[in-house]
Length: 102
Image (cartoon, rainbow, N blue to C red; front, side, top):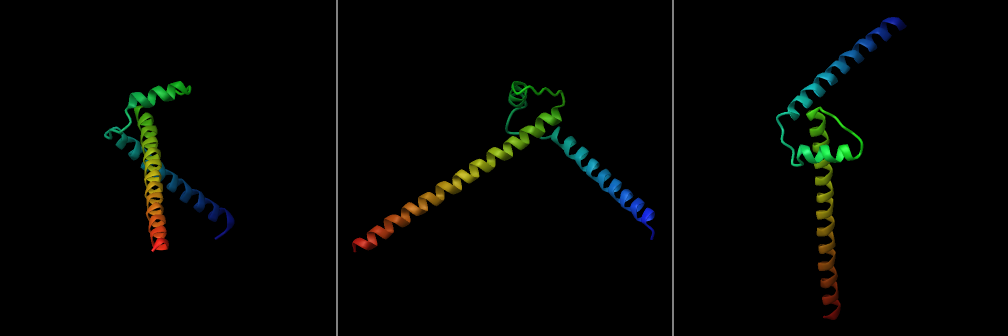
């Protein structure tokens, strides 16, 4: 296969992949219309407008809401893990002190 044929095949493969990505993105954005995020659209719109961003597309508003919900969920999960780790170390410290006394 010569260089031009190889380049054309790579370009066609790249375009096919891009088409699949576009189709997946379109499908995902359409699914956001049926999803009700935990964070209300009005709240997201308020903070986006406060930062200077206005968008009439509800799908984009919901995408930001989903991303925000994921971020808050991860922070809460990390905080819970930290709390459990701290409690476990306090219990361990108490046990170690009791064993030293005995």
